[in-house]
Length: 331
Image 1 (cartoon, rainbow, N blue to C red):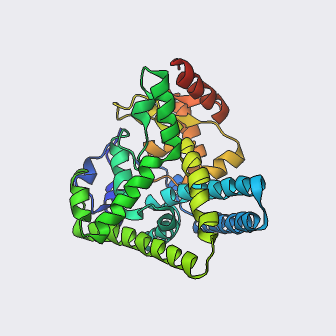
Image 2: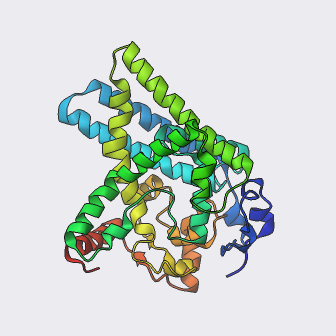
């Protein structure tokens, strides 16, 4: 495995803020065609996302009862898809321009209670050590020998309760000027510019929450609850958690080799679009500079060289195995 390519990654302004970036165990493909970023692809994804958000929102407003609940789950599912687009912005493979990718990433992330800049900081640490996640999951409880603990851990995992509570704590830290102190408890501090941007992300969330409450009270409307709060809880949280679950679960996470610590899944074109090719996760961890659109082609080349140890033929097969483990303790 080769070192990080200085021309494509460490020289990039986005990653200069991270200590010892040149030592991260990542590889960069020598094939320039696979690293080519076509901004039009991401523009199309944004148009599709906006269209789905509008349609789902109108559907929620036009319905009642169980149909409204179903459409709120659908709206949350669209928000979960949006989270996968944030991930692409982190890697600067969306439009290929740092300023634009940061803008779109922040624009999508903030209403979801995600700090783009903290996500970026945590995510590149995750690429160095896959056991370090960017969200507050409950993998340890799901690895328990007790079926009750496993089931309880799974329910807490898909509810993303820890993530919601942590976001509120970060907002409180930003308002009280304790952002740097909280970051210091998590590992090496990023530079002052990144710390300031992280704090600004959470201050923006605080502003959105204040605006939402003010509008709700002033106009006596529950639109914020119906179009944001409920979809986030019953749609975004469980679906996002389930999308992320297969990536490293039960892989050899102590290894630095993506063929051993990461799982890929064969998926149809709808699933590939929905998870933004994150199903090709071995390829993504093998080379973070590959455009998400090129990951299927890149993985096929990697598999020709050497098969992946953790590869599933479909999401259905993976989740059947996962739920069997959850109930019986056998994977």
